[in-house]
Image (tube, rainbow, N blue to C red; front, top):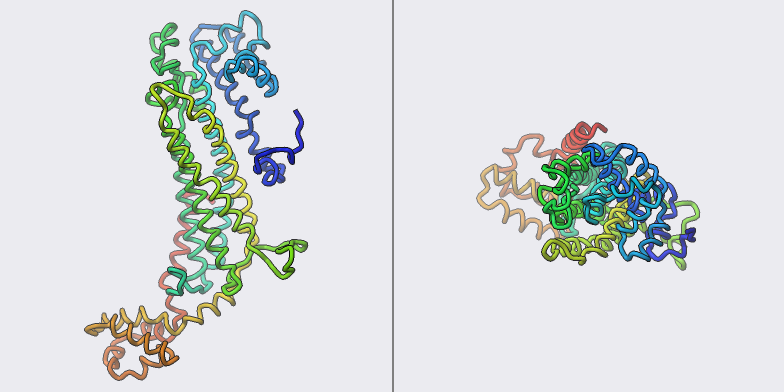
Length: 462
């Protein structure tokens, strides 16, 4: 059935799907067509395992394989309208395409959620390995490049929205790259744990035990065809914690992207102006203010995170299923694909923005200079304490108040204060340089940046 995308209801299918290549890639795993395709793959794997046990011939496997290739979503939906059961509809559609001799072996010994949960684990595993992780690695590499490029770019650090101590913008980028890297590692670990089942209606292998003395081994054989392992124990469904952990890992990736975007958005404020989004030649920032250049991409990332992050609550609710299974996760479970798709669209957007980020080092230096004469308060206090001053912190605190009240530089006041001459005399050249040249007070920001970048590149082979 052909449909104009602008007649779709979900914004992911119209507003955020205009990039056709990405939308097509997402469709391979997250569309309804993909859902049925992966379920059909599980049905085929079951028949292959039955043939491997001699229950049916390999000719049956060939028939089912061809039938699966010819399955169309529309016909499955038409059959479901008649049967009121999605998996039975799929099974019937496969059976219609094969010989009478082969039909008994389709879905033999399986229950619906042997197919549904296994297919979901399979498609999310493959989507993550083939689509999501590579996209995240591209973004990660871009952030690493920026960290290297800006490893010496002076920036004032901020805590609680206030100027704190200087660092470099490279270290800021390395910080976000490190968080993203750790989330990718976590995602890979979690997705490798996604598992399937072929344990029957209540998880007791009732049906398969009619054929095999070792139904658990048979389950392993079915899942091996798909590159999955069985859950340690199941009811009618795979224990929900595996999918809960998977979605949680996606949401925490989303959180890193949103935090980064929120920081960059604030740095783009008029009065700060340290970073900026790329602005296309014909792009309009406001319908009434022609001069506006709004951080729309960073704001979109945060907005998408706000859309999908709360759905994690639903995943926690879906941990509850009455006895061996109820249907209270039947509808909600279908929306996991939207979370993964929303994340992918956000990663794609942020990669483009990051690759064309404007960094205003001059404005960073100007903003640093606003606090240049106060930020030496920390090293001054530490130097004085180390030199034996009995109450260095209180002394420096009062000195900062005096500097602020009299409109003087902190450096001027300490040079003129005879009370601390003996303590300052104990400082070496490097320590004095830091006091009188606050630009040098960046700790090991450069070295940490290089260390982080090198470590991540080595671990990921970038």
